[in-house]
Amino acid sequence: MKVRRLTVIAFITTALSGCLAQSAEPTPKLQHALLVTPNSIAVANAIASLLHSSQVQLADDVFTTNSTVTLDKLNHKDSMGNPIMGKQLNMPDQFELMIKGKQCFVRHLDSKATQQLKGVQCKINQL
Image (cartoon, rainbow, N blue to C red):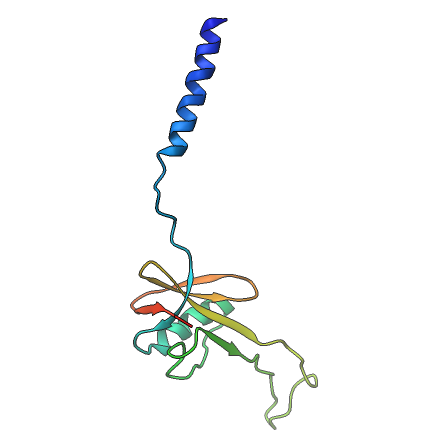
């Protein structure tokens, strides 16, 4: 009986000391960011990947002044420029540039799917 009691006390002590041994610094969280230098190609590739699309066209200064971007879904048109199947009322896709540590990410607001941006520098958006 004493052995069992000592085993339980040892287990509880070990568990509590493990909780106290964790780092005092919090895990960095994703924060809104801006690109340090424009890189619309890298951003377009990441967004295309998130949308499962072949390509996306963006302005050259995307994410340099604002942490979010909204993309209207394109309506498919026939050779005359008329919408196929009538007017489509698709909601636009919204994306945000995020930073965690020194790594940049693009996140789709609706699905929360996130794509890492490689080869770009970003900074925390102070606004």
